[in-house]
Amino acid sequence: MKGTIVMNHIKYLTADKNNRSEKLFFGKTSGILNWNDTTYPHFYTIYKQLLSNFWIPDEISMSKDIQQWGALEKDEQEAYKRIIGLLSILDSVQTRFTLDTALHSSDTSVHAIMSVISQQEVVHNQSYSYVLSSIVPLEEQNRIFDMAKDDPMVMKRNQLIMDIYQNFKDSPSPETLAQALVASIILEGINFYSGFAFFYNLARNQKMVGTSTMIQYIHRDEMQHAYFISQLLRSLIEENPSIDLDGQFTLWVEETMREAVRLETEWCEHVLEGINGIDLFELKDYIKYLANKRVRMLGMDDLYPGFDEDVMPWIRAYSDESMNATKSDFFEQKSRSYAKVTDSNGFDDL
Image 1 (cartoon, helix red, strand yellow):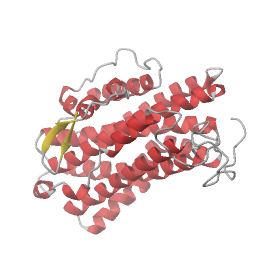
Image 2 (cartoon, helix red, strand yellow):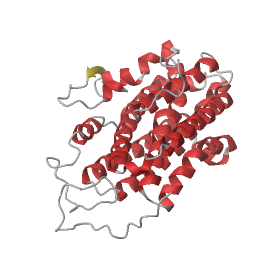
Image 3 (cartoon, one colour):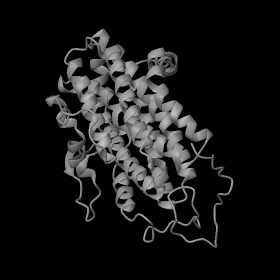
């Protein structure tokens, strides 16, 4: 890695610099955000899309979930709690990471978008507390949140991402940031999805539908977060071609993605073994399919040739494509299409 860049030169306002930043990160800017004068104008479309995703956990009814909780199989209850605990640690860490990324950005549009993403991660964490408060007492809620850091399998599953994030935090540079953005795509574009699949499996059997509705909102947010991060990474490399000048970064991405798939597969075997309705062989193939989608977002070839279709037909109703096509308004309980944007934002390519 190249030398660490110390960020003590950043000022809140630098009047003699342009409002339009010369670089996404580690550049110079006045600090003033003018959406009509940015280096990457299409980021404004992404910003507006993220704002349109506003939702409040408390508005999702948990009444039926409360009634159904006691009727779940013991292994379903245990998986439910462990996955909520896992999601809570991922979103907690992601909140801090996105804030750190925002603070290191010299592009005010990136700072604004990452701040919105961070706020949405906070809402996700609120939602986990909300659903748990509906079905289990406070002592059990606290145990579930502690499970995220006390369970060796959870920590093993998360350590890859934590180490990459920590390296960026300790030694911020274009190179360590590029690696951290890859880790973020893995977290939001792969690590969440096996957990989502568990809740969607319950929902297709008319179980815990309130929880799955909330998960759909989180899923939609995370899908768009991963898309923006992929765009950010590609632009970062364009501005700093030395990151992958010799192809070593591409090789690192491939190796890291494969390790993430291995860890995710191991976790799924651990927490979802024996859950009625979930075929672990299909789920493993689904994880490879997701990894292929994520590397394609970065302009790379598939890591796993032949895994280019969703092998779980029942989950297609909750796919990224379906999330992109419609969103549910929980105030009206109706489905409404996203307004078509005039500029191509790439969401259709997810």
